Image 1 (spheres, rainbow, N blue to C red):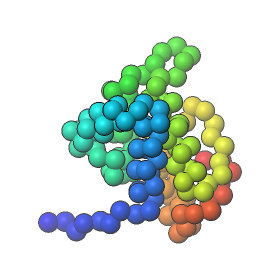
Image 2: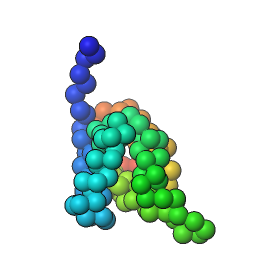
Image 3: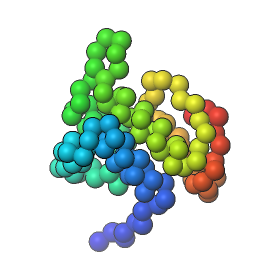
Length: 126
């Protein structure tokens, strides 16, 4: 058996940001449907920081890609999740749109791990 890893503040705040954003944008019922789907794909919200690529892929499977010049719903949801997450971390950042959810999340995790602080981090651009 492997050792259990405690959930970091980073992971916990990310889970909260995802849950709150989906509830705000899509409602309680749809949030439950999405979270159940992710669980069936072996991707509980607690694993999103470890597997952001899979999270993005599964959101696109659920919500579609969009077309033409209009961003798909999954991309808009990811941007909203990142905005909420940055606020929870106390990070001041201006995102250039459209964002690459996986890259931004990985860079943010690296920056917060290096700084050893999760609150009041100021980053101009990610």
